[in-house]
Image (cartoon, rainbow over all chains, first blue to last red; front, top):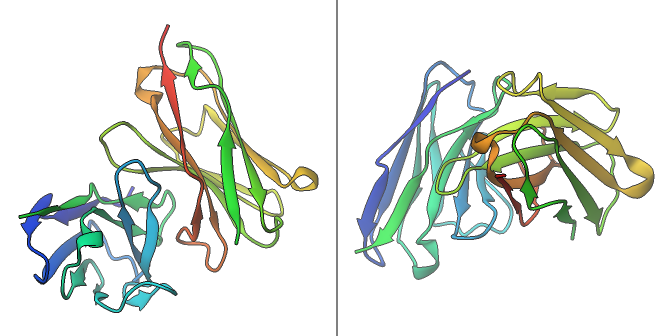
Length: 107
Length: 118
């Protein structure tokens, strides 16, 4: 299976801060990389697919970049509703696998 | 707006079979991938398997010998069966759809907690 490693595991930030989360795949995944947001007790929601394409309805403060094995999710100006856990997911090789998650907490 | 709802027992005894059903409303089973994903309490996400509208399936090798996913298009439902469960199978189970593209999830159910315990 392709291993997905996210860093950091958690980050404390304030409203208005820029937050960057990284995701590294154990092998190349041809940009088949998605990012999800999950709030406590809720299902994840899709933010970004194909490494950098914003899902319809997702605010433009979210952006994704990267290629090959290294990817980033950037929140340009953190809003109160963005405090959540974020997961990356590779869609290159089945079984599709997720990173362990990055929890964005209030500073 | 497509909505998914998982249903099934919340408690299953060790060595028995876990069975869940996902009912789709607000849309019909078309040329999509239908998936089951689980999340142990306080942990990350694991992709269990997928079924295409043709009935073709893909299973996570770590569970392949124990898992079956099936589709009932007449009822707009798909189902998960996991045999010989143990405590490590305790998790929130999500049904989910890959509608626009097959490699990520567009729609998720709310999830249902299944606890394996005697």
